[in-house]
Length: 394
Image (cartoon, rainbow, N blue to C red; front, top):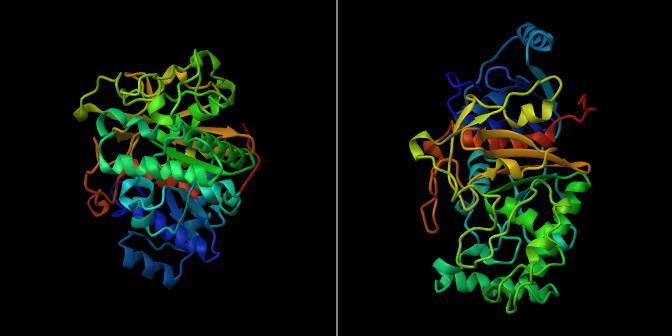
């Protein structure tokens, strides 16, 4: 999985997942040649690699044993992690959304990793318990319809989505969309606390935490929910309820395309040509989880924009790991934490290979980006739940 050898990094994850689906174990060789996978040698696996255009090497048992012995040495920052079972994947996404509206569904489809879609009804019926891994689409859990009001309130798609959200909330027994979304966010919180794995990108990251922090507080203006917001609602925000963020200031104006001070989009001063973030390096033997999540063939990854592009560094809780950051700009791009028995990862931005993705833009053709480091981070999270559980050393 290094830069020089692998012709299609993204589909390599799909072959690994496909192997796990057949009840075969895989070893993930952390920090070894870009985070390579050691698969059993079988003709069916070789053929699958060839069909999908994935580069592979066939090595002897003696060579494999030597590699594993070298990796086990305390002198090297490497580790072999056993992947045991293909995780069952759910993507939380509105009905009727096109797959290319979301980077995760695009890369899962491209890598040929199966997933199922769920939305508010399924979440409120506790169907999350059927899945090992949950991705949150670019959702607005605050009930403000993505803060698209100023630019798109007269657009047919905005009017239709608002009507659909109100009808669904009513069907579910809620008087407001914000109340329905809070109920969904609380169910997702419980899923993670109970041991689930959650991955969110773009506006699903900060709007999720904001919704949790504003439980019981009306932060929506009349054009969103028909009545005024609570007076002085900023002082009623409870940061102890969030997963990742603290001390943020909510954006009150409905005409500003922003949820809060968490996001760096309007504060950052970086031209596209120099917009990169750096992946942190962890001890593979002592901290295998963040090491798995940062496996890549480069430590320097191209930045990309979104409604929530990145996170204000000093508004991230101290127990949350910043795994990717632009230190010069004091922003975090890729963060991870533990909540109860489960885990969450937040990744800023919309599409790793579409720098300024906008409403109505064409889909990204991943055939043009088979080695994308930004997309690899998504797929690291997909395979992470497959790892054999072991007691953490730290």
